[in-house]
Structures are given as structure tokens and as C-alpha cells.
Amino acid sequence: MPAHRVHPQRQVTEVSSLSSAKEMPSDLKHKKDLPYRRCKTASQQLGFLCEDLTTCLPPSLLCNGKLDCSHGEDESAIYCGQMPSSLPQNLIFKCPNQKTWTYVDKVCDTRNDCGDCSDESVLQCPKCSGWRCDTVFFADCDCIPRTRCKNGIQDCADWSDENLCE
Image 1 (cartoon, one colour):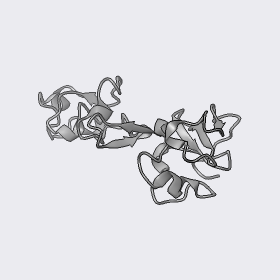
Image 2 (spheres, helix red, strand yellow):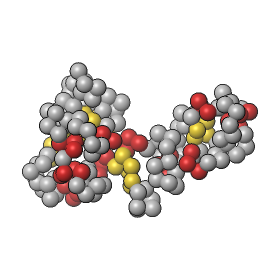
Image 3 (cartoon, helix red, strand yellow):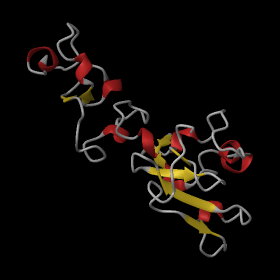
Image 4 (cartoon, one colour):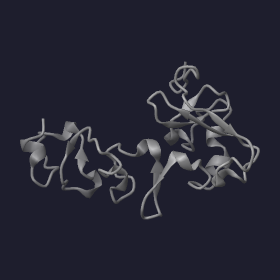
């Protein structure tokens, strides 16, 4: 069984197929013939439900150059043509600078996708799975992976990653 397949009875907790233009989000109104499907992935994050109504993809697998849905809808021009506006808007995080964006499953992954740490901020990610500090490198934002604690390289401005982090 492929890694992204889930059993709708157990894992897909929300599936909606909106067919009328009135019900459809504004970003998909020009795609009246295309159902807008939502699901929850095995990790309970928002996902994209493939046409087979079984496969729920993490958003970052949309438009990645690899066919993950059996009918290829995850790589179709309808979704991948004018990114990010052609993507379902609930699957993307728009950065405050309005120039960059990332998929919602990439928010709080310790990578600074927006360039200003807004996708990794305390407001977005109140819980830090690593060590929280003022970092030396802006690309790290304020939460470094625990694997970088006590590794002999300063990541935190106050050296707490080398002196306190465990």
C-alpha cells in the first residue's frame, strides 16, 4: 500500500466535494467542473484528497513534479498552473511580505520558508520541538533542532545551545 493511502473510514475525517460555484471558494470558481476535496492526513493535518477518494496527500506533495495521485490530478495544470493562486487556499500559508508562501504542512518545520520567520514564529508554532533561543543565523528563526545542541557550534546568541540545551 503506498505511503499516502489512508482508509477513509479511519483516517479521512473531513471530506467535502463542493460542486456549485456558489459553494466553491473564490480561488476555484473558475474550475466549476473540478471538485474541491479536503481531507486529513494520517498526521491529522489538512490534505488534498485524490480522485480515488482514498489517497490523502500532504499539501507539499501537490505540484512537486511527481505523480502521487493515481489519476495525476496532484500535478494537473488546474492546480499547478498559476501557483499559489491555483492551489486550494487552505493548503497554503501566505507570508506577511505577500511575495512568498509555503504549504501549510511546512509551517513549524524549523525551516524559515518565508524569509522573515513568520512561518516559524511563536504565534504560528507555540511549541518548539527543539531548543528555543535567539539564534545567530536568521535562517534558523528561534527554534533549533535538538540535534544541534552541544555539538560544538554556536547556534544561539547566548550559547545556551551549548551550555544548557540537552
